Image 1: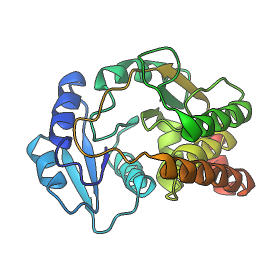
Image 2: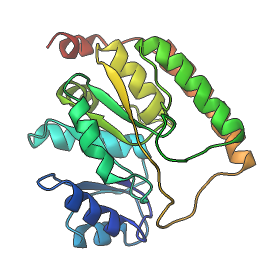
Image 3: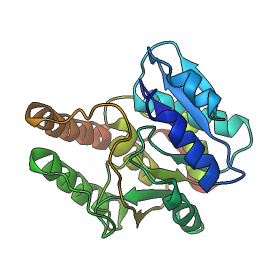
Image 4: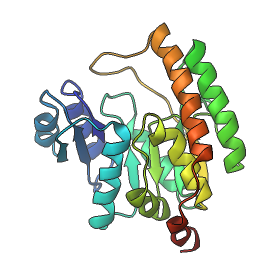
Length: 234
C-alpha cells in the first residue's frame, strides 16, 4: 500500500484490508510523508516501511515487491491508501491469478458508477486501446492502481519496476507483456476518497494527457531487458 500524506485514511484502510483478507500481510510504504501516515498505519496493524524522500508510487511499489520476494510472499496486491479501492474486490482478483500473472481491477468494466471526464478520460481510453493490442487481450483500465501480481510478476517487478510518473501503471504493463506475463482484468467498483484532497482539474488533466502519451512512447521505445528472459522461461 503506497501512501503519501494519507494520515486521514490509511488507518481505516489497513483495518479494512486485514478484516477482508484474514491471514494476509499488509505492508504500507510511507513515501516520504510529512504527516502521521506511518504512525497511523502502524497503529492499525500494518508493517510499515518509511522512505526518507518522496519517490512516487513506482518507487514505493518497487520496495514493496522486493519486500515480498525477500520474505516469501508469492502474490502481491497493490491497493491505494485513500479508501477508494474496496478490499472486498481482492479475492476475485487473486482467484484470476490462477491463469494470469497480473490482474487489473478495472473501473470501467461494468461494475460501479465511477466516471472520468474530459481529457483524462480520453487519455485512459487511448492508453487502454494501445496496451490491449500489445497484450493481445481487451483491457479497459490500464491506469488503475488496484492490481494483483502473481509469482512471475513479483519476481520481475522486484528486479525491474519503473519509478517514473505513470511508469507504475503503463510501463509496468509493457514490461510484463514483453517478459511473457499474461495480463487480465476483473471489474471493480470505486468509492469516494475517505480522506485527503483529489488532485484533478482542467490544467492537471491536460498535463496528465501529455505525460501519459510520453510515458507510453518511452515504454514502447525502451529496449527489453535481457535479464527478464529468466522470468519468461521459468
